[in-house]
Amino acid sequence: MSEEQTVVSTPEKASFLKPVIQIAVMVTVIVSAILTIFAWPVATANPKNLPIGVTSLVPNLTQGIQTQFDQQQPGAFKFIEFKDVAAAKNAIAHREVYGALVLTDSPQMLIASGASPAIAQLLETLSLKLAAQLSALGGSSVVTFEVEDLAPLGDKDPRGAGLAAGSLPLIIAGIVVGLLGSMRLRRTSQKFLLAAFAAILASFSIVAILNLWLGALKGNFFLEVAVVALGIAAVSLTVMGAAALAGRIGMLLTIGLFFIIGNPIAGVSMPVEFYPTGFGTFGQYLPLGAEIQLLRNISYFPEVSTVTQWATLGGWLALGVLLLVIAPERKPAKV
Image (cartoon, rainbow, N blue to C red; front, side):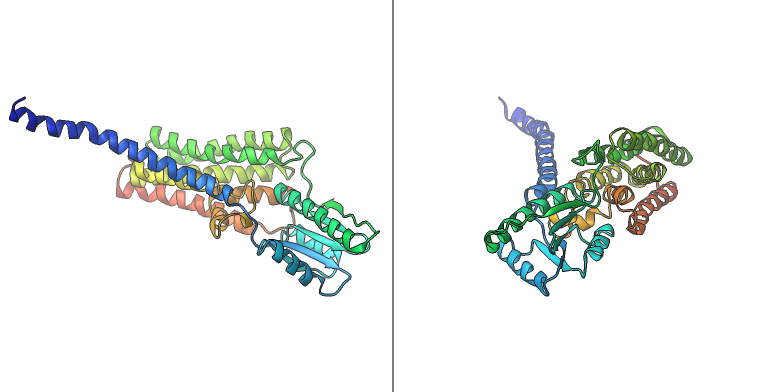
């Protein structure tokens, strides 16, 4: 091989290998990041300051229970004392606590499966352990806790699996509408019309399945349709607006925020107290987290204020509208 051939072949080899290496490294980084985001919250899931009510005939018993559980599992539970059973039930109805221990002559464990099936199961287990400890202290007397579910799940979906599984289509619907609208539609007015029409049509179908068929939702049908439609429209408009304003990069970043980051921290299967500090709270201000909490409140906790969730979804909707409106003034959409 001549010197000239060697000089020519070296850049060719470099140009041949460079895109291969770049793609391989990029895929590795992306997959590792996605795995971390999805697996980390689940793998490290432990309750932190989980609010549990206590009502008792014994003064200052709550502090003793707090000390006992802090020795076994530091920082896991935050026991809050209530003057009577009615006050504890009211706190559960307003989602101030996940459940309550009633330590009276008729011991009870008040739970709310609608808030979190995982927490309800945890509290039932906790009541069994506490009953065994109290029975051991009492000698011959056996203590048992009667479990009362103040927000039970539907008979068709007793484990709450329907809403957990249905959360994925909720976010995918908006993303797909946003993707297709960005790729196939050129006029801003068409994108607005698509977001509205697709959101209304899809929301009726989704809520019909989750509410009427599977029984995963139990609230007002048309109010739940409004929630789902708002969520789909908010996501789709934001995706289309980001694509119109910043092209493919803007679209991918938005999808990554809503799906790759927002999906695992939305609080679908686990409450916010189980996530690493700050992650669960952040997830509630993304569309899926706000939508899931709003649907839960409508279905199981009608007394709870839902202003925050409505405002969150409305804020994302407004952002999507703003991005689409200002995008043509800066540059045409590139996808």
